[in-house]
Image (cartoon, rainbow, N blue to C red; front, side):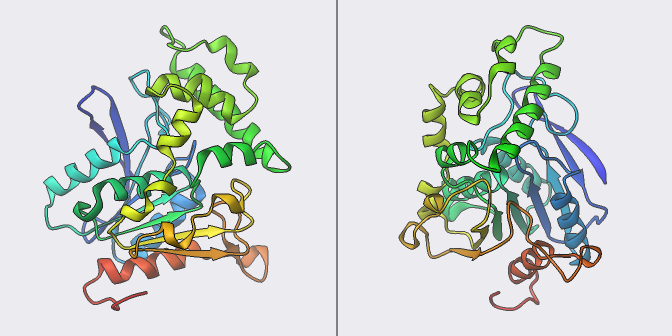
Length: 294
């Protein structure tokens, strides 16, 4: 992969990791919470995109590339500004390029919210969202129970570590001494996410950032891939049919976990279903020779 650092208008930067192909339609990949281009699902999709004859790029959310970002703020599930800026920049470079966007987990929420906000004016051919946290308050509640708490502990430890590294050489706008006492995502979002990003509370953040309320406004062809056994969500979070626009299709699997969807007869012969299903859907929208629908 080749890394490109692009400067943003607010003095911060985004790190982009590009696949090896230099031409063809472009697939922008957005990772999940605390993910990066090193995440297995991102690496696997980049390889699948390359094999399909397209060019792939992973957009790192601020601070997720291994280098702390420059501003006090970081990133969150409703932050569509950087994606919007990047798409506009890429189209300014090549106005005729066909673009698709794929987001995982938090990145999937961002993709869907951005497509809804842009509506009929979204300048991309298609979108895919995987393991979406449709209702952030429901996710925060779900992660406090059962085996899901393992994911919560791991992610909170990663978030605390990154914040301490980010502010180790300067004054922090939040109380770093309180980080060690944060035990749930709701506490983290109340004490960190909300104040860093202009929300009045965790509830304000959850309400404004959750994508489910915006799905009717999407006019771009979109595929949502979700599993019933996802440890990050409950059935209550899934949107009803009347909450979807005609452009949105949900494929709900009984199994797949969170951004997993691994099959195969044996561990040494694993089948990574997402790396097959996502290109199959995108082909109809990125390749002129592709089928009418998938």
